[in-house]
Amino acid sequence: MTHLFSPSSAGCRKRSGEAGFVLVFALVILVVVTMLGLWALNTSTMENMIAGNEQVYEQKFNIAEGGIYTEAGKIGYSTVSWYTITDTNQLKQVLVPPLGSAAYDPGRDIANENLPASVADILPGDATRWPRENLVGNYTPGNTEMDYSYLVTYLYPDTPPKGYSATEFSNYKYQINSHRDIDIEAGGGKVGVKNSL
Image (tube, rainbow, N blue to C red; front, side):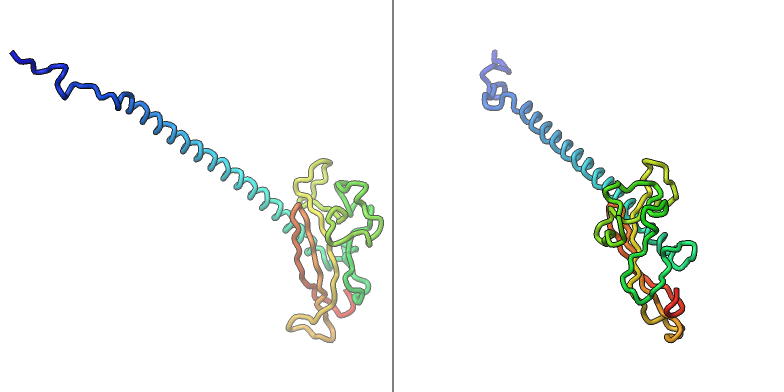
């Protein structure tokens, strides 16, 4: 009688070189998949941080830009006396509220060592000494969320736009700087009677 399954037949022999191969292969695949998952997690965390930083930058930029438009809207109105030019031939005049007044720093946010003693102490590149304002008029101590620093400078008289008499009118040029951790500069003009604002 012959045995169909003998331990010495070729189909049932153990192969000594492949013992545990499937387990090792599964562990390697598991490590690779885990590494890919960690990489994807780190990438998404980094993207969230970048998006958050971009949002903060945009908010600061918008506050500074709003400051420029706010101050530009005040030029030429008698209610804001410090923007009135008495001598249009005095070029590059820094126009600020009275030093030390409530209009200069309504929220009392400027540190004492940065308070300017004179207009000459107010420099275009140093926003720590510029006047302060709040976009929404909230001057509660400690609430600086919508605060910005600004500097308005009268530059020079220029030719008026088309349609205005060049002998009677002038286009008075201004530069407005605004700062909220970001510096923004804009320029513009106000048409007015020549040699009189």
